[in-house]
Length: 166
Image (cartoon, rainbow, N blue to C red; front, side):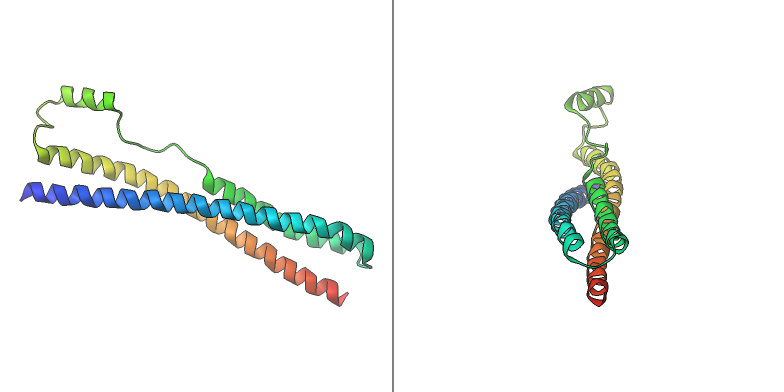
């Protein structure tokens, strides 16, 4: 009975770890998309600036205010997307040489399949806790990046309406 419990816990720990790996991959992929969106919007803005300055009667201080607010949000979005992609040092599985040393130092501990499964389950648990903490940090940066990008789009709309009214 005890052996079945550790088999189940080991399988559960592997599944949770694999889910966290997928979560990390998805967060990094989304952060890359945010960086691409930043590139397109910032390029469009800097193409518009000379045209608006040259052909409009809008005071330059209003134009600078408009583009500064939009650019600030976009740069915040870029910085947060980059931070979401950063790789922090995390706990990982022991190396083969570390395991050889561990097994030779504690020869009786790893003899039973139950003890091996218990060790692996505990190792997955330690690694997962650290992995999940790093991914939660990444997800927070990604959320800030997305909301900053949304704010920049909102500023684009608001300033467009203001420019039309002027």
